[in-house]
Figure 1 (cartoon, rainbow, N blue to C red):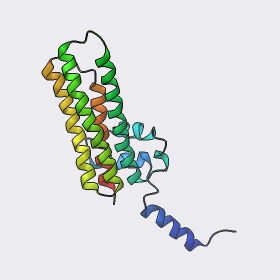
Figure 2 (figure 1 turned 90 degrees about the horizontal axis):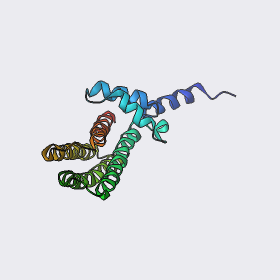
Figure 3 (figure 1 turned 30 degrees about the vertical axis):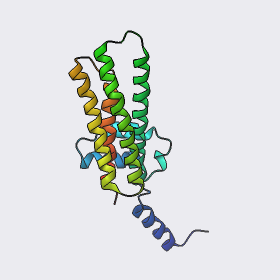
Length: 175
């Protein structure tokens, strides 16, 4: 027995209206089309790693991006702790790592704030929190430049900036 045609049409419209048709690929494409700073391949690759991304709508994908930024910040903090525990660390490196430890701790809260605000549908504040994460990553980069030592956190920094950009761009897609 087939469902009535009207019921099928209503269900299809509901799926489109509520963003259930969003996929990681279509959402990342739309985000990259609207914001030239979004790297499409990064967006797809990273969001696809999350267990809930295949079922997420646009709103869910924005929260996933914030969550991935949070996880990256935690990883950076643990990496810094391991580096600081190594004996014989150069004083300049130790100083820069110490500064970045505080910055990534603040970044952790920025991404958590972005997640909470987007979850609460307060999108403007969520995007402000994501922007804080970008600033904090750049401040960490600057700490190593000022110390004239190479940053062991460069990949963490690049990731933080790009996932914050993705988070913001996807949040901008939410209707």
